[in-house]
Amino acid sequence: MTSGRATLAVVQTAPRSLELRELPLPDTGPEDGLLQVEACGICGSDYEQYEGALPVRFPLIPGHEPVGRIVELGDEAARRWDLKVGDRVAVETLIPCGFCRHCVGGAYRLCNGHRRMNAYGYLGLDVPPGLWGGYSQYLYLDPHALLHKIADSVPPEIAVLFNPLGAGFRWAVEMPGLAVGDTIVILGPGQRGLACVIAAREAGAGRIIVTGLDADEHKLALAKELGAHHAINVQRQDPVPAVREATDGRMADVVVDVTAYAVDAVNQAINLARRGGTVVLAGTKGPQAVPDFLSDRIVFKELTVKGAFGVDYPNYERAVRLIESGKYPLEKLHTHTLPLADAERALRLLAGREPGESAIHIALVP
Image 1 (cartoon, rainbow, N blue to C red):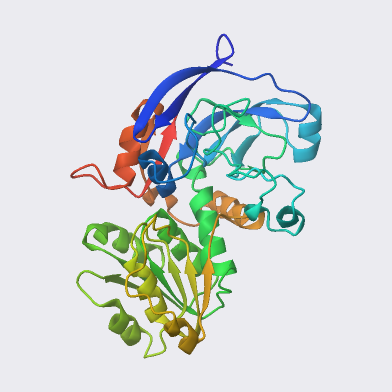
Image 2 (tube, rainbow, N blue to C red):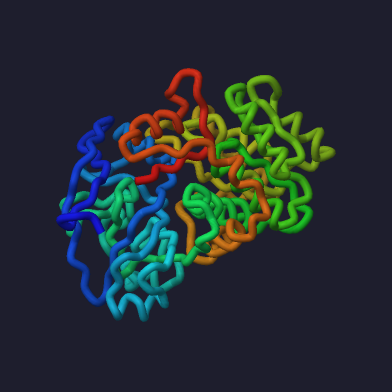
């Protein structure tokens, strides 16, 4: 425990403004707890939040992909979570209310019982006790938090991949109903795109195709190493005829868009899907309209188009168990481990804003 019941944390006070502060640790009771953070993964949406593109209330502690050890735990919380002090856990992003129609209906990722985005990394310091973000030495464990025990043998910077891998299982497999032998096209070879490759391979996809840009050549190569059958640079090759050739004219059963801000990818996804296929839109575009969008293409092809928001408990569990198995060289996805003091550089690095440097996955460690 830190002396004086305090913790160091990165606090965002405004768009593009981060400060390293010392904050008080809360007193915990029978139903909550306290986590000592070992590492926190950085998501592309963290950069959007840093830029001010997401509607959050400042000041706040960013970070919604934490892994750490429980250092304080109330008796009721221990019973409910079936955990004890010293256990190592991954913490889900969302903190559902448990009582709204979405929660009781099994879709807690759509919870609206709090009338706000009630999630780690998005709640402000004005919401007691304030320690809601993973860019910190300690994290408050709310009574409604959802936790996943993870093996001690997994390095912290690899353990935090539970979040993108969980997204891969939900977005690329469960949501579109990817079946054994299906063809899937994944737009974007970032950490979640590569996670989709792994999930699709685990699900028995017959053909996995990944697209990217000139700047993504090393990521496209890694996609093939992880199990993709084809990698297409869309700046050098039109993806539609390339996918048509790779599939003998059948096109894709499933297309998943995990590109950030790339509005043209939405049109690409629709064009790459076969008649009767499924498109999953998971990459956020900000306040940008899709140019030349013709909805009749969805009608005439009878496409199913789904928006993907977040991950759920079963898919986080699949991700944790896969990480623990050591089946895939996940260390090749992880490119940087940085201290809390370098949070701003880490965000810029992940977003490709650091000249001459590139990253796939970054973890901040206290």
